[in-house]
Length: 461
Ligand SMILES: [Zn+2]
Image (cartoon, rainbow, N blue to C red):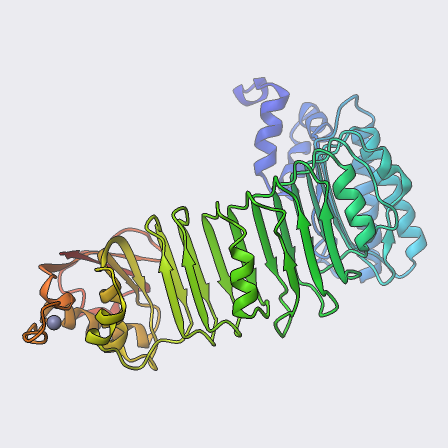
């Protein structure tokens, strides 16, 4: 007997979990023991009915029927063993004769629940929505439940449930409120593309820590959350226009992470919302065009990111413990006056660890660099060379930093960054693909021959 076959079952199951489904199924032909090991493998994963037998010339109907036979046989084989199921994942594109296929889905859910399944991940694409069988109410062992393309007409109470994901599901506010308040262990809630909501109101969810809401229709009017345990709230309407909704989260004083995308906030509404979170550490605002000004003052904020806010005109940040700031694809002023800036900015530039810059053809490089280096002195300045525009910028930047002409502020007391920069060198260049740093000699001269990657300049101040 080979050494590998001497391994205990649970170790071999662990190894099988790293293999693609097809290969782990192939192990069953190795020997009788492997056949048994495959049948007793507690993770039943059927991720995609689309690709099942896809490279063979069968009709869609034939392939789906074969897929159903395969899932059914695998499940029945597992159920003959006296074992608990860790995970049952199924993604299926159901045939037009719903009733026949839905009967299989009902049966499989029942079997998985009988086998005390812990993670149930069920994604059903069908012309008519699949309604979950009543047995879901009896699932006492489920800790993770992911449902896609399902209809939830009644709330369920699963005391063991810690994580709930509903994608493309039909559910109303009342059912959602009941589920979140009655599943008393629930920690994570993820909703995506769920229709049926106008006003979402969540309360009495005593352990809920994370709420992630994606892709909401324009019908959504308001969200009210009164969950003191909540630590993370992520909302992205992903609609073609910003969603004009009211978000009331005054009942979430312990929030640490807030990510908002595609929300039509006014400045007043935005500042009112974030003023409620005195413990906030991570703030991400994206695609909120009506925002013209952002003003933030916090001792706890560590990470702040703004992206695609085209209406933005001013940002005022008083966050002494900030570790990371990202400003992505938002307007950059066309001109910059260091004197004007000095008059209105009370604090001298801060030293920061890493500053990553990205610009495009339309940017005024000079104003961009002067503006950025008036706010902070980076020890490492990184720039990508992903396109032509990047190469132009890198050449320009390197030239500016090396040959800085500091006859600029002679008549002024407070001087610009040029007077404080002592030395610049290329610290490294790391290609995206092969992550090995390249030899640094004459890198800038060979810029256009280089693979795409990131330049790191070391700056001494
Ligand atoms: Zn100067």
